[in-house]
Length: 258
Image 1: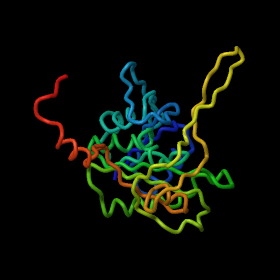
Image 2: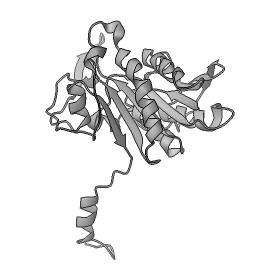
Image 3: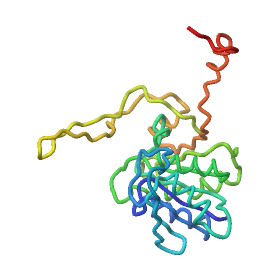
């Protein structure tokens, strides 16, 4: 099995090194194409206004100046030689990718681009650390190989990606995997912190408040809060079918004019 790895935290990220160790347990044909620098929050952005530079690090490892989506597209179509990858793994992200955040995540976007190119894609993210900090990715490393192997055995629809999130718990306390649906927070956690530079000019840091919502049973958020590994099937059809049905009753045919 040929596996292509990417991420949005950059080619030197600890999470990518963790993903390489995870992939090595599944295959000896592993390739890497990741952004040269961090691209968190890039979603499915493409680099269209400037060229993308590729730096070859090793025989099967590349860094690019592009986004995670660029990396997967180049990896699948240009850089991986000898045949198309059988699987794309994106991550392991430092921090969970849950609920509405998945629409902004470069990690999830890497898996989506794989799906769009006809390759199964899985996004992997590790929830915030527990002590000791040097064990940040330990849950993902311990459990991802077995979870991925089982998912490959059972398969999933070609228009779907799988979003895996690992809780921040000691290994002995992680005892369950739950297939979940995408949740939605009942609070707003994104924020912009205003600061002033040494020349008196204002600037902003955008980030997240560490505040928990009250998620429903069966959601990715609830699973992670309660210490379970979350497996969420996602797809990019954003149609709201109930509204499609309702609007069909009141608008259609010749366009209305004022």
